[in-house]
Image (cartoon, rainbow, N blue to C red; front, side, top):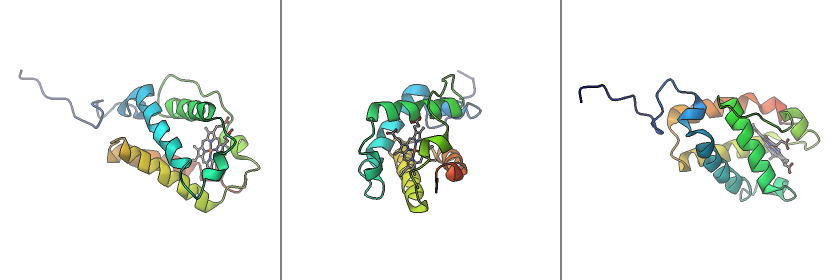
Length: 133
Ligand code: HEM
């Protein structure tokens, strides 16, 4: 009574909280990564890329990378982005398809516009570490 309500975000973390906290920490990010994986593996533009992948391993590494990169305490144990995608010769259309899958997953998980915009900027900044290698 009488106290100001905290600034509400989609996940009830304060407006100054890290992206990690605003996404619901590790469990929130794991849920988003599940939807990203489901989108990638049903997207006709890129699904073929993942036919020989171990889903548990790839989802764990993507989760770790997001947690570490968004301000969480996790350590990323995978390869750096250039090494991970070297030799795949991923093209720009595939890159856009993967980004669209991520944005779609964020919307399905009710992630707010501010967080979606931040993540899109991070993804796009990685383009030269993923495409034409
Ligand atoms: C900014 C965009 C991207 C990010 C942040 C990202 C992130 C990652 C991460 C963290 C891994 C695991 C690295 C490891 O194995 O140590 C990985 C592997 C992989 N990525 Fe990406 N990726 C991106 C874009 C793409 C695109 C556009 C494609 C192709 C359409 C792609 C296809 C793959 C494949 C096939 C693997 C290997 C999976 C395996 O080892 O079985 N990635 N990526």
